[in-house]
Amino acid sequence: MDNQIVYLNGEYLPLADAKISVMDRGFLFGDGVYEVIPAYSGQLFRLEDHLERLDNSLRSIRLQNPHSHEQWRNLLARLLAQGLDQSVYLQITRGAAPKRDHAFPQNVTPTVFAMASGINPYADHDNGVKAISTEDSRWKLCDTKAITLLANVLLRQAAVDNGCAETILFKDGYLTEGAASNVFAVIDGVLMTPPKSPAILPGITRDVILEIARKNNIPCSEQAISKTDFKKASEIWVTSSTREIIPIVELDAETIGSGKPGAVWKTFYKLFQEYKQSIR
Ligand code: PDD
Image 1 (cartoon, rainbow, N blue to C red):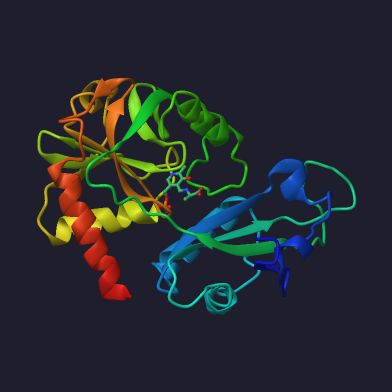
Image 2 (cartoon, helix red, strand yellow):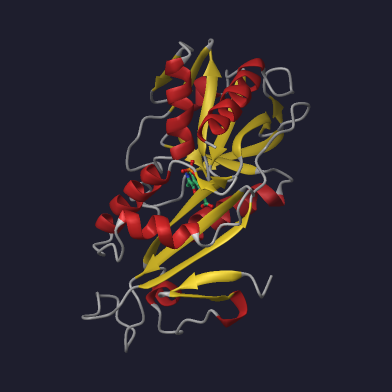
């Protein structure tokens, strides 16, 4: 692991040798943004979408993108092992300033880090996972993929403490997303997910699922979902780049649908794998 090659500020080097200053604003303030991009058989999945979201995150924190999309493509490709399914994590912070001051430092070079990891998409057709729900305690910039993730960390840990895989969040009685995922529900036969807004991260997996639904004439809708309606769902899924589509079969100790991955999930599992195959 320590001799895994990672990228840091223009160099490819073993993980154990990748060092940054303790004055880095990522370390001191969580002042940075990140992306997580899956790669199937060594091919980055929906890279342009991830890089556009990165541009939006950087714009939101008023930091210039240090690289063009073409430079990112080449930089990340060198981290991938040919033929393997992996995910790439990349992070840009505002860099190391001479002194700790909340306001932006002048003339500081951003810190750029990237590494590849193994990926383990959800594929169990016989069992789903459990989730809890709670009030969304996060801030108003949830559409920025900021490394400032303390609220998400505490929310995910609450799930783990309860023997669950994810915490599903509600703001003022309406569904937002998961601690590290977007959320879908099948309600009255329609696949639903909350619309894009500053209250959720615009997930790339979420976009792919909606595209697949529309292409296959499967009824779907981006709409506000109240907690009362959500509790009526026959299927609930959480989605992310690293786990793809995960069926939730128990929410707050209550069974969802049949208590097994549902028929709509099985359809989407198949369609999602076919889509991945088509771009390999
Ligand atoms: N997280 N919402 C939140 C809060 C997330 O952290 C994530 C993903 C998503 C799903 O987005 P996408 O489909 O683009 O991965 C939604 C990544 C995987 C992470 O933080 O590791």
